[in-house]
Image 1: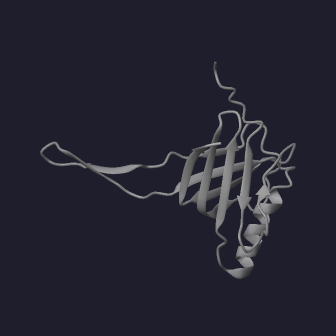
Image 2: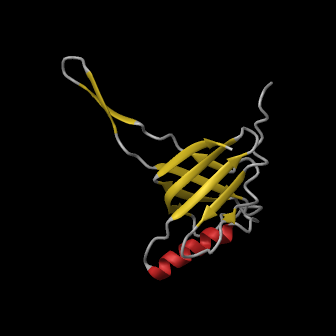
Length: 144
């Protein structure tokens, strides 16, 4: 039997120690996107002059873009993180857990920082979706 691969029942919970006392569940994602996660570089390699491939493991961060509807109340979470960081002139560390009920998988995202965002939504006939970039130290997969 094939898996139901809907993203409609995914749960994305964000933690921001020192700013929010409890985890915040993100809601009202963009119409066709909830988040994108970039490919993680898993190795570095170099070819020797005599034809040998030398390779090694290197630690690399995981970049993720969270895409919210312009009408999402969750936009306020990221705007609050930015405002708090600007006031404190310091970073807040983020944590997250994404549960994909459709596939029975859970992902724990650790030691993240708010990396980039547009200061305000773009506007056309309607306000555009908002994109928030987070850089994570690591992502750990598990079963639900």
